[in-house]
Amino acid sequence: MNRLAPTLSLYIGWQFIVAFVSVLLVVMGLIMLFDLIELVRRSVTAGDLGIGTLFGLAALKLPHTLQDVLPFAVMIGMMFALFRLARNSELVVMRSAGVSVWQFLAPTLLLVAGLGVFNLMVVNPFSASLYQTYERLKDELLLKRANTLNIGVGGLWLRETSEDRQIVVHSRVVRQDGSILHVTGVSLFEMDKADRFVRRFEAETGQLLDGFLKLDRVWESAPEVKPTFHDELFLPTEISINQVQESFAAPETMSFWELPKFIRFSEESGFSTRPHRLYWHSLLASPFL
Image (cartoon, rainbow, N blue to C red; front, side, top):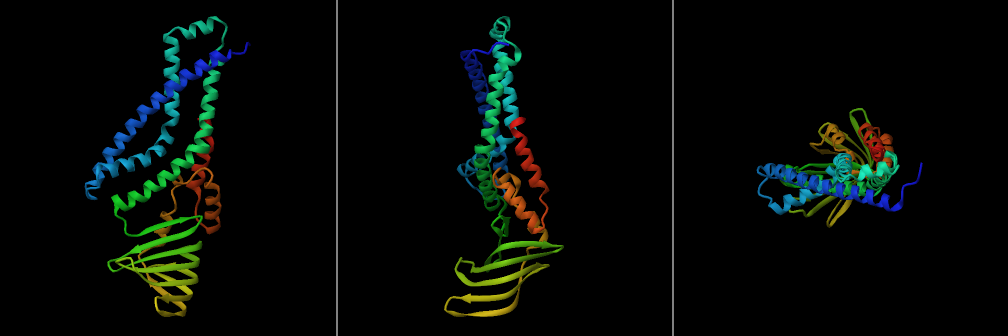
């Protein structure tokens, strides 16, 4: 089998790139349009956010959605490229010159493989970061969630807001034991409704139980007040163990590089990692799709 001439390889590869980029731009436009329509519909109940804000939200979500449709864009782009070559009788000329099917497909296949690796290594971390920002802004602007939970490699972050105060809790180590959540290295900050600091708690360990947070060996400090020590302290909370489980960072908000570390952290904490494992393996397989 004769080796395909470099000039012909570049020409076929260029035809594929032009077709792929054209399809991708059309798909991006459609995704932005439908996402913007959906955001406008949802913003009716959340107040007037402005078209600029909604367009920004749609743009933040766009790279994540493109991850799902990229294989179809590649397939349609390849179909259009081959159709154009066939319509201009260029495929007929190549076949009559002794070029096999695999020879004129090789440049396109190499480009697709390179695109898949680039998407996994570079585009995926970028899109995951933007999607994480999108989820946070969606919760704040559209869903108006007062209580926020986030659990990741950095530990547990919890924010609970009421009419007269706001509490922010951070725990470095989290471990689930049945219906009880054990926390270690707890820092709790309490602010008033004007976001002015009220007091701070530092506890060695704690437990999230039904309706309250139990802290052990606690130091309490406040402005112009001498720190006081408590053997144990009970603080009321509306956060439940089920909400903590649901607050796990979505697999889509973490990059290919971050997922293995998060999976190890979750397993050591006693939480299920099945969705994150499935997503990580789907990313591994994406260059071959």
